[in-house]
Length: 320
Image (tube, rainbow, N blue to C red; front, top):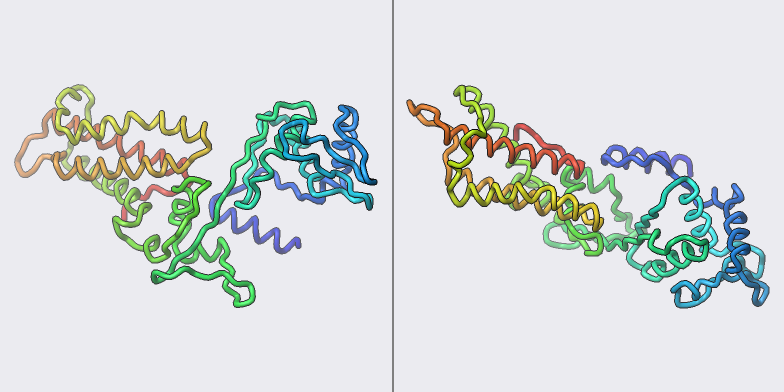
């Protein structure tokens, strides 16, 4: 068990995900936390005895029925650990408890909220996100998972196949409640059809532009932004102005995929702008105010893309 857990933590670290605290379910029982939580529920009058078992009056708090907490054989039911874990988090100072559960756990939403309410807390202090299945596709065919055939897919396998950046981006660009099909060939490709490549390439292209501008002695300037009147310039400017709102909504709604989709839109706006609006002077052309203003717009775009990728835990390469 220790070796397995060590490997899990190492895999997550290499994936760019580190947890401050790991809590083992059995620690809720061995530490006495389960007994403490049930004792607290007894004080509130929300535990009763029936058929030799101890029941939580969860139906009083929005659950579809009451739940057995201590079974008739004296052993704690599964929910007992959930009760103790919720109370443990509250007593560690957290006023919002967000749970990420699997696709077959919809029934736990009302159950966990009832636990919070029964303990005297606001039911809305529990927030439950329900994840969906991730399907891998290779050569147009689904990669079948079978323990017997040895084709169980691990996070390590996904990273080995497409890399950390692509794996993180592929998993985060869809809503948590949506099933994901990851095409291994697509996500490993250096193609504009690959969403993470498309965004990273825009950043690398902007970095190359900045280097070329420096070689030409062109300095960016925001003194004459009124010169940016082209429709593609306007589209890019308006898109950049949405970044703050996108971040606020992504955080409030627990929907980080909004950031990924936004970055793809900005990358598209930039590529269309670049194809229509010349940024650098050519030949013997003297750098002017329009060049300086367009360079400032490009640098702002580069910063927004870099910030967005950093929030998603994805690298922003300067060369590709």
